[in-house]
Length: 481
Image 1: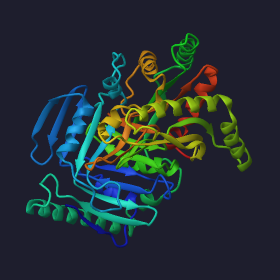
Image 2: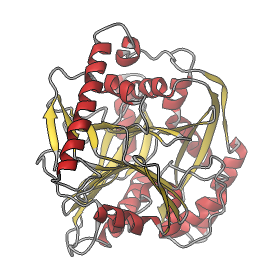
Image 3: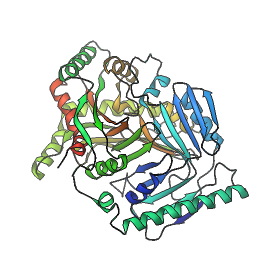
Image 4: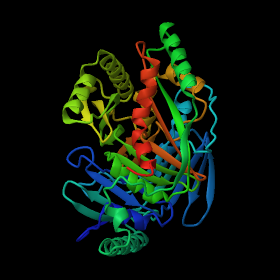
């Protein structure tokens, strides 16, 4: 069953977020740009009935209603499949892509459960390999029609039972109260600057300058090692990244609102796990499943935005016409076609968009869409398993690239270049590639940036590209615009 109702005079997503974020385990899948296409729907929620935390094959399932914890020993993707089957229910609204299910992240290191190789990086932030909340009530926003909906499924009670109806009504009433309080705050001066500000002034508190886990010389040395591997025929491309850290004593919610205003993106996200707060402004879709349709949209190729319209257009054209970037892009599209081919119906893999230009606040990117139809015997979890992590942030061939990343990068990536999104209990899902993603942990803020290294990469150019990609974080951390 599903109770659903529209909201009259809906407050902004930011106003709702500020109210929900005071509740346990808040989550916001934040479509902040491109309402006519990628960024149509946002989902906000809190108070899951179940929490799932994975460290390697140890999975803790916590019942948030009773406090009971159950430990499982299992690879994560088969467990995810079992969880979806346990709570399986069809869509009912007929128009919303997500109605009830899991919201959370798949960490990059889950790739060790997909490809069999030893992990050598250090998990210094103690991040789980995966974290999800199971949510039965949420607020959905359709940015194209400017409509806000309240939804409640009655879970974890059995569908269509009196207990499920009672719980669903209670949860809808809770959401009504949250919306009413958000509307009231938005109508007064309280939090108005936080909610509506388009300024670029810092509203956080950060001390000192970000420190990287690579020095300039060590990053260049790592690139040279990759070039040696390419010359030896081991790989064609590797995505190398570096992580920055800074002391941070600011408010997480305010920082995220500021961050998203500076750099809008269609696959933004805010998650709290207890020990870590995750804030993402990703422009990249990892995987969409809608019934038997599957799609991925790899980004490969970056240029900074120009200071004038003429310079900006020239940089975009330079990216589109660059032989190096085109070769790199085609390589990743081929990798993604192969990944989808593992689960696709014969002959259904196709590329409806090839190397189109997409422009965001700080960068131009080139993006392609690879799509297919899923074979009937393949579950959504198997689709994740057969393509994780996304090829645009590993390299080609994928396994050898991941081995080299582990060799050269000193710390675990955690959520970075993993995926954040929803897994509807119907089996539909939508996950981003967790780039442009910050992690707040123990009074520090961490963010990671990288780029693809190919045979004709110039080490200094590649280092500068990481600085370009870090611009949105650095701007948010500046004391003034």
